[in-house]
Length: 207
Image (cartoon, rainbow, N blue to C red; front, top):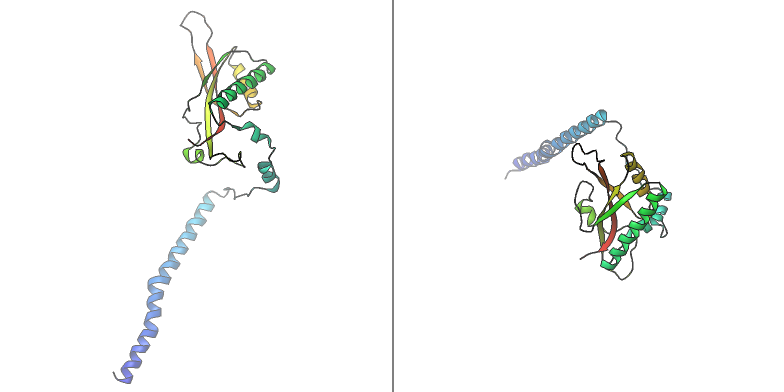
């Protein structure tokens, strides 16, 4: 190859390759990045009140990690059937005392020990998570379990609100899960019967 032809080829390579890289790679990436910034700006303009991420503060972390925190005593560890029955007895006793303190009359309670799925249930991904904080030593992994307690509340409908307040004050972790009413036959003048459904969450070992 003649020296002049070699110089021309070298000039084409030195100028053409960078130009091709700019045209095929750099410019398209720049345009996509500019379009992305425009979309982000438009989204921020539509909803400027989106709160930023706030990390857990020092006081909050100390509360969550404290071995003697109150929430740890509310989330019971239930390793077997005997402990489950003990937990049911504990919850019923604590709720009965709380209802009596609020002046709420109850006609009876019914426990449903099989898991109940509904809008109030934890999502499966969260159920698979390990419980917060260190659990008992030398025990297998633990996961979240729950059972239902249905309480018949006497009186008018307003008594249900007192019962909800009483349930929130119990040492056991009780969450409102539903309400149920039973109406008497039409025309007999019988008052309706009302039930408060509560969910008790606990920790149990993996099967």
